[in-house]
Image (cartoon, rainbow, N blue to C red; front, side, top):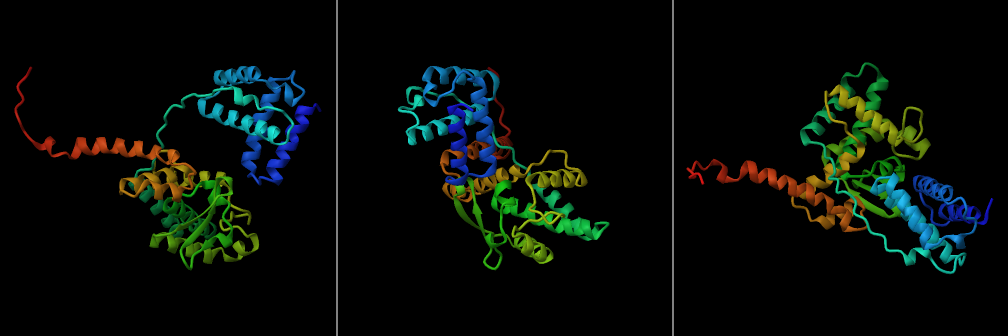
Length: 312
């Protein structure tokens, strides 16, 4: 093992033990940094990383990956070199000599039409009554609570699956969420139906929750995974004859755009979503502007005026 790889390993350990980064972030760092070392096989020392080498590597990334992926991989490398500089492994940071700027294509978030959410929830609640087995009925109780919470709070799926029993205070209707970078936020549940669904789930699964420690549990008494939630949404979408592919994150987008459409201040939405920068939240204003166009086209009173306009 060369000195560069040894220091990268130390950095990964530092991220795990000192920075307490989550497993998904650690996995992404490992992939990104392994890719860098594979591309720069001739480099054995951290001090051999130069601005020219970084420019060559970034050019390679742009040719082979989407802008969003390139941005993440550059961020992973920047974080590594910042660590090297902090630990005096290198005397200067080669990124300081580079100016990197590229524009990501603007992709508007996909939302779920509100009637579609209504159909989805209705079919889940129907399974609580009409499910062929007690197993199906019990799972439907949990699944309703999951979907209601996703829609009521805009919580990320990773945050939902990481909820511990102590994070959920149903007596006061509050959820404590640990977001990206271990940032803590508390969200109040304002919807009665959501509260009722969560209380019913907690009552039905109380023994499993107590033994496991996590709030949402699967049929094997393990913490519910994000993949299990994705599969669950596909299953109920088919039962409800919904022809769009619904993902957990679309509930988050729908939560944000619905509040924005209702004239909620964007800074409140930023806080509820756990965004560190309002720039991230502002993408939802584009969706609202798009809706404005539709409203003005369909609802403006000029549409109903029958006026003869002379041809040019």
